[in-house]
Length: 148
Image (cartoon, rainbow, N blue to C red; front, top):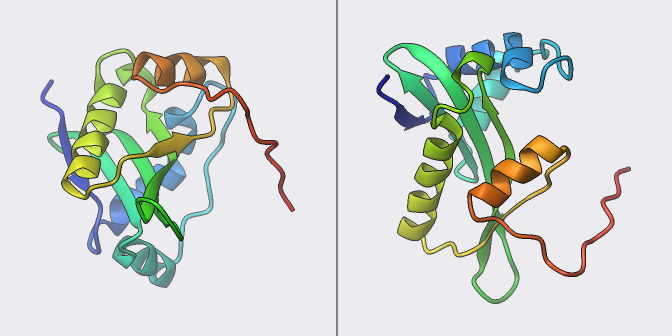
């Protein structure tokens, strides 16, 4: 297996369609189902947004996994940080270095773009273990996650 990582851009709408249709295969067993795909206009806008970093891990034409991050502008200090919003690896490709390759690629991108901090909200023990194994840590004080 040869893993190549590519940043999705306009023209990669079919990959977004595949990710939506096959979402369950990229998530924990039994936790997800197919997603409603973006319209053509929404997909183009998403893929054109410079704050959206959506990378795909490929082996030839086979989609192995993806990583979706957002560049978050800040009003002080380093001016930007990265939110690691979502990572997924097809069930048959897990524990074969795909997730690590995606995170390594993200880290190289961060260095090239002078972004020092990345953060992620991990919502299950498997994800927490994966992120810790990749060098992420927990700060002493944790915020309360609220939605509206």
